[in-house]
Amino acid sequence: MGEIVERPASQLSEEWMFLVFVLCLAILAYLRYQSPARLKHTWRSTFSMRYMRQVIREESNPPKEYLLLAFQFALVAGLAVYCGFKLLNFTWLTGFALYAATVGVIMILYPVKAIVMSIVQWLANGDFSLSEYRYITFLVNRFVGIILLPFVLLVCYLPFQSALVVLYASFGVLVLSFSYRIIMGLINALRSNVGAFYIFFYICTLEILPLLVLAKLVLFRNPQY
Image (cartoon, rainbow, N blue to C red; front, side, top):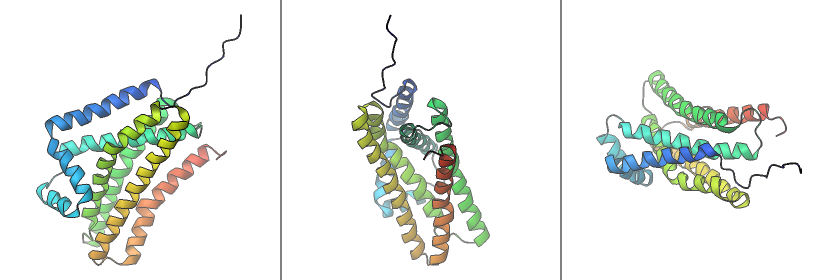
């Protein structure tokens, strides 16, 4: 009898990914049925600063539906990052364990940022537009969690070569969203007469440094890269 040879995978998909997509679609369906206004606010606020400020005034406390959209962002962004790790042959963790760890890091990172912003406001005894920037950060994440879903779906189920192009586009969406909220934060800070040094210090410590630390951890666990 001939030796059975495992056929190379032609897609990045894994069995558990289907359940992730079902959960994401269930979240969107629930919000579309129960709270369509939240989806409308997320979409319009992302592109209209005036509308966003109106929503901030009307929502003294973040609605619970936004927690679902934040979870959706972690699921979708985590899947995009996981596919990137898979292409890099990440060896520390694999499969669902790596995906769960990625989602966990995303879910922890942003609340920590929000807490640090609150501490800075308390220590400086002022807002310095940080409240608005905090809202923009989570707003953009909610928006990205929605628009990135079809990209990641294609990444997982298209043939490998085509999926690679879409994966680059997915990372492009993440980079653009990161740049957008940084630029909006800069504009708001300058309008609030915050010094350029403090703006630069904040961006380096709370935006760029965590990304560098995570990248360093990845390279440490995968020295071949």
